Image (tube, rainbow, N blue to C red):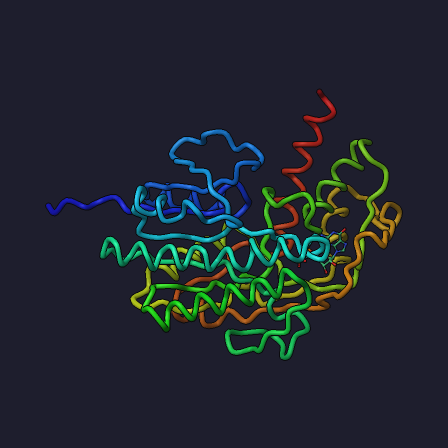
Length: 327
Ligand code: GDP
């Protein structure tokens, strides 16, 4: 029998939600998984099966050395300053990390390929925030962009650099245009997790109010665990390409509040207060993705529904809140 060599993956943003789910998926598929962590990252310890390396998208000075040392077959660029509201406070930092950081990787890969003659595939975590003030609904790969935040602008820059490296140098480089994707591992600053965490803590008497911004915006929310499968499938195609990954359903923040607070028999309107601190200078009112290309070409489809997602998150946050009570 021919000897199969173990495939090597390198994931930036390994300490984030998507880094967690993607690393689990790839370990399960037998990959040797490496991850990039910034020096001030919240500790994820040394999870079994993972090799961690220090590096920062705002620097890039050691990317070439890391590529030479790790020799990855696939690089997944999931790292970013990914919070939209925060990007208005830190626009230049966001442009540097979320935008130019992509270029730092692409250029390091191009040079590594020249040095070694190896092929390294590149996945860029592009975002539905690029559609911003949407030009058509639902949004697909042909829909023009109109970003509404420094974050969205930075993602558009990274998207086009990825395509330019593909077209100019023949890099195997893909953009996954992922719509919002959530899970119990979602950062606490994002609206879904903020809501499920607050509902559980309110139920157990750990907090009495939930301050939110705009309740009218609508998002196409899917489960992060489903979405990392689409990333991997893009990288297994014969040709690199760009794909929208979405559920095709859109829901308001109010609907997410309903789905969450109902679990505890609570009426959210008694607890939620509007706080202008959480409003944004420009809002993305409604996003809804059309993932028919991903379905057709990748054979991908979301498995977890909106209600199941809210349920999964609220159960996980209830468990955390119970632990908080018993401490
Ligand atoms: P985004 O779509 O990448 O910006 O994901 P978020 O989860 O941060 O925000 C989703 C939507 O929820 C946006 O339209 C926000 O304006 C809205 N939203 C309302 N209140 C809040 C809040 O307190 N925090 C966050 N993060 N978003 C909020």
